[in-house]
Length: 525
Image (tube, rainbow, N blue to C red; front, side, top):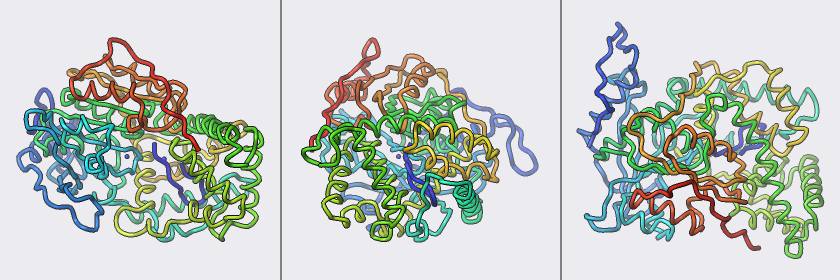
C-alpha cells in the first residue's frame, strides 16, 4: 500500500472475451438497477462494448509528461456497474508496443503500482528507458499503464484544495494530550466532509471490485481475450479481487509485495499490522546507519541513531526547520527509508548534512512540494483516492474508543508510525458513505497459477499477506526474498527473482515448489 500525508498525520503508502459462463440478464427494477449478479452483468456489457469499440491510440497530451513513443487513449466504463447504460467515466490508458517480432508477441501486460491512488502511466517508460530487468518481457508484451478510476486523468477526485493540502502545516502525529487527539479527530472529520462535498458523486463507486471490473473492460478494449497483469502493493489486492471475480480471464498474473486479502484484514487491521512491520524495518535502517557511522556520523549503535532521531523530532516540533518541516514532515521523509532500500542512502545523507549545518537539504527533501499541486496528478489526488477506496471497500470501526484503545496499545512498542497511520485512516470512521463488505478472495474455475513475490521484512505489506494469498490461490507459487525488506521487489536487481519472473511471463514456467531467494544487494553509502 502506498501512503501519503493527510492533514495532521504522518503519511506512509500503483478481443472482448466475456465473463466465463454467460451471465443471464437479471430482472431490472423501475430505476434501471439489476438484482442479483447485476454488477457482473454490467461488467459483461461494458466489456462487450469496449471490445467492439477498441481504443483510439494517439500521441499523448504534451502536458501529461509521457515520453515520446508511448501512445495514449481512453476507455469508457460505467460509474455504477449495476447501471451499465447509465453515467460513464473515461479512464486514461497508455501503451508501448512489444519490442520483439510479431511472432514473439504474447499480448499486453497491464500494470498497477499500488496505492490505492497510484498511477500506472509510467510503466511503458520502462521500455523507453531500457530497463534491463524488463527487456526480455518487453520483447513479448506491450507494456500498458492506466490511471484507475478517480486517479490522475481518470475522473479525478479531490477532498481538499491541492494547494492547501500541500502547504497547510501538519500537526505532530504523536499526541501529547487528549486535546491533541481532539484536534486530530476534528481534522479527520473535516477531511471526510471535504471528500463528500467535493467528490460525493464518485465515493460510493470507489471500490476495489469496481476497479477490477474496470481492469476487465480495459482488457477487452485492448482486444485481449486474457489478462496478463503485474500488480505491486495495493495492486496485489486489485489482482486478487480480479482473479476472484474473473478467474477464467487470467493468463499470467504476477503479484509483488502482497496486501493480506483476508476479509478480517481489509482495511482496519491491515493498517495496524503495518505499524508493527514499519517499526521493524525502520530499525533495520537505523542499524545500517550505525554500521556506516564512518560515513554519516549520526551514531555508532542503533540505539544511538534512534535517540538522535527523537532529538531531531523534538527540535522540529519546537521550531519547524525552514518554517515548514516539523515532526510530521520528518516522519514522512524517514518513512521512505522503511519502505524502499533505494531511500536508505539519500535519507541518511540528508540527515548527515543537516547535522553538519546544511538545513536547506532537509527542507528541500521534507518540505512541501509546491509543484505537486497542479493539474490532475497531485499528492492531494493520491491521498483522496487512497482514503476513498479504503473507506469504501470495508466497514470501519465508528467508535473512537476502539481506535484510541488499539492505537494507544500499539504505540507503546511501535511508536514510529502508529498514530500517524491512525490519523491518516480516521476519516473512515465518519465517512458517511455506504461501506461495502470485502470480496472473499479465492480460487475460481479457470484461474491459472499465479506468481507471488515477497520480501520477509516488507513494512507496508507484511510477509503474512503473501502467505495468505498463496493459500487462497490454489496452484500459486511463492518466491520469498529472505532477509530483505524493500517494498516492490520485482523491479530490483536480484537474478534469482528476476529469472523466475521472466520464465513465468515468457514461458508460463513455474518452479515445482515455492522458492526462496537470497536478498538483493544492501545499499552502499
